[in-house]
Length: 108
Image 1 (cartoon, rainbow, N blue to C red):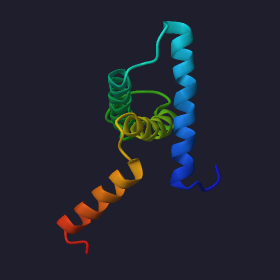
Image 2: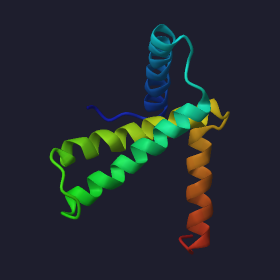
Image 3: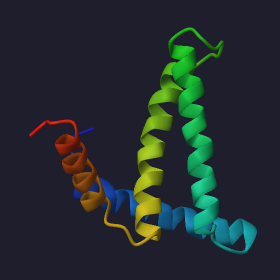
């Protein structure tokens, strides 16, 4: 994949979520709520943990390397979606977190 800027990643993420909303409506009659999105994110976050454990030979599982990469990407996607659905600017949230934490630990 070519180097992307964060704006492009955000736009692609939100467009992909719109397509999933259409599938949800088609197959279930309604879009997932933000709570359902959050639960899906938490499930995928747990799978990142399991795949990390497998990568570190602490959990027996096949295909953990490729699944770990996929799930890390999916978790970032979910965070972008959840921020947007919660009316939070993800770029500002990350910038504010980094700035606050860098100051807290004496980075500056």
